[in-house]
Image (cartoon, rainbow, N blue to C red; front, side, top):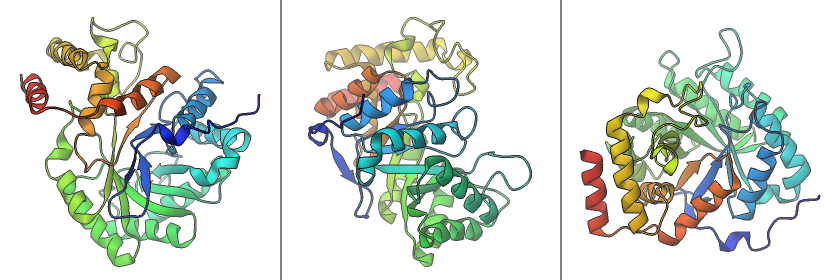
Length: 330
């Protein structure tokens, strides 16, 4: 069946300006980190991408190593672009990254000019695109001069292979230096992608303030703490959950008894707000206007519906904020 985008898609989404740029991002963005590899059901990715766009989610976030195997997510999304989304390419924000291990040898990892430019060329081939909208350096490289890494980002913009550049997983002090270098080169940093949730609050320790001062947007990844901030683990670890699998991103040791108590208290508060816990957790990350978008993963289209439904109730009273802080502090 030929896909036709929902004509009402833009009526359901909120779009927020990214830092001091002219670009707006949807409040909810879809990450293709999981469920878009060769081990996923073939039609799952198509269903998720179609439903996301129908809900007004215009930003699709990838990286060179997303899969498994590495590169598989870009291959799949490239096919969906050709078969489903091609007529709407100019309505999409497509991002990719490089910074983690992608191929063997000394030139397939970290942050050298050699690696970043070669990796983006490979990503563009997999995606079937002439350019991506945002290209990120995925993590800091302790051994490559920061000037070299930032110059490579500047270079791909001047080549026309990326419209904007961003950083991911950079601590505040290093992000400060990187954004200054990019400003000097004439290619400002558009956005920073930190890990941020109720259970991971490090960005509050200076990073969000720095980004606001620099005019850089931010997009929070893992805002549901790998699924911990959902109703999935209220009664322990289900046999079919990520924590029960061989995933290296969430393991049973992280689902502690103390953590479960917090999750249950947060869930009770969410229910009083008339929300699911996942919706409240996303709203909490977006309580700060310095956060441009929240980046979610999904395995079912209903999870996308829930995330977008959060926008109808994303404000917190002073009492609710205090109650959440008390739960998280216990």
